[in-house]
Length: 123
Image (cartoon, rainbow, N blue to C red; front, side, top):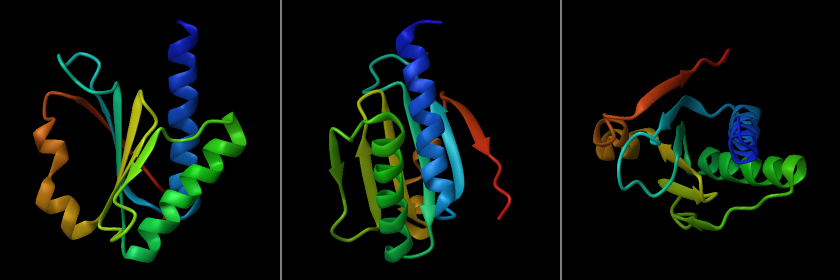
């Protein structure tokens, strides 16, 4: 395992922790590494129940990643309306949706060739 793989795996674990800290729902990891011409290696997709929770998830991920591994997103998009916020950590892109927006765009189907891992939560 290369140092980069270890760093990406650690980043994913810390992002998941940030999502789970504020009870983000229906968390999936899409492994895009075996798909040609992708913009990153992984998507992490989750949802919140309101604008407030979507923003809380985004803030929690940012704080947790910053604190645990001293990293910050290269770019964040969608904070204004909090229907779909994209957080770009270069190799890992986090998509935080509201339920209806996630259903509408259905990213998991668009990236159907990706290996998907569903994260079980206890809440």
